[in-house]
Each structure stands twice: as C-alpha cells, then as structure tokens.
Image (cartoon, rainbow, N blue to C red; front, side, top):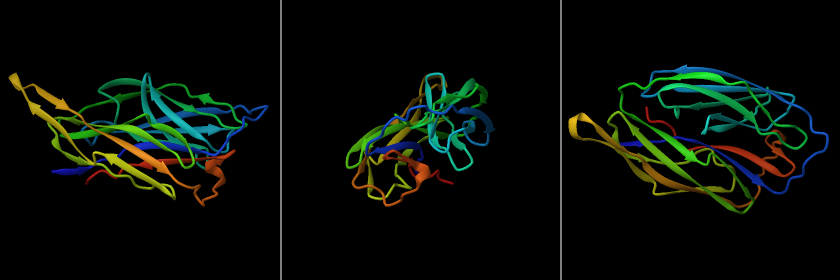
Length: 227
C-alpha cells in the first residue's frame, strides 16, 4: 500500500526588509470548527486580522506549532490540522506583524480532539515557517506518524511551488508502521524525511498582497490526501 501524504509549510523569500516607524495596531480573533470523520479530529482554524492588509498568521496550542497561513483580502487566514492529540486543547492565532503593522494574538479557543479506531497517519513539518534569501535554500524535517495499526509506505511530494523553486525529499518514500506486540499492544514508528526547498530567482508574480519590503510569502502543500 502506498499513500500520498500532505502537509503545510510556510516559506518566506527575503530580498531585504525594513521596519516602519509608527506601526499600526492590529486585532486577531479565532474561530474553530472540527470534523471527526477521519482517524483523528481535523480542526479548521480561521483567524480574522483587523487593521492589517496582509501578512501571516501562526496557529499554536501550547508548545505545539500547528502551522501557518496567509491573510487574504478579507483579513482571514485559515488552516486545517489533525496534529492535536486526544483531549481538550487551547489554541491561539498569532498575527506575525509586518512592516508598518504590529503583531497581535487572539484569545484562546478550546478544541476537543478525538481519536477513532480507523487506521491512518498524520504528517507534520518542523519547523513549519522558513525564510531564505532569494537564491538560497532551506530544509524542514517531515514526520509521518501512523495511528491505529497503519502499516504502509507513504510517498511525499510538493505541489503549488512558487516559480523557479524546487522541492526535494530525502527519502521520497517513508514507512509509517504500527506493529503488534505483547498483550495486544502496538509499537508505532513514524517515517521521517527531510525536505529541501531551493529558490533560484524572484517569482514574476508581483502580487502586492503577498509581499512587503522585498519579502515574498508562500504556503506550500506536500501532495494531497489519498481518497
């Protein structure tokens, strides 16, 4: 069995930035919706940032970095994640700020995460937020964690790469395996890989909403879930 994995990673390519004086205040709010159809609860986290025209929001639960998302033209940033373990968890949205705008953090929202008996896996990138000079490269560690007896190879791939950017996994295929042990207990071993993202030249896309003072921002998705 071979399954396609997906994960979100934020990449900023920097050509030079300067801090603005008299930065404006912002306000961030967070709403949460959950879906328990899969092996783990999938939470849709939606932040709304008022007072800022663009930027990046990071979602966190305690020490767990859940991922990042871009602020759209309506001031919203949304992320889907199944990284939360079973239990109740406080989640916050943090607007990272940018030239001319201050950072802000939402009030915490409680997420009730459940775990079913269906076999599956989760995918996480560490770190989820990366920056590099144009022409440079960055890397992130990818962990594919099996749950509920999942035992198969998972194929990793990138989609939605910026122009003149390449993505390489080492290795491409990883084994995420749960094996039975004594008294019915399972030992589950994550599959691990390293993704390297190489930038070459500036993207011809001059979308002002996703750039500021020489920084271009992108969200990368590694593949897509198998049906």
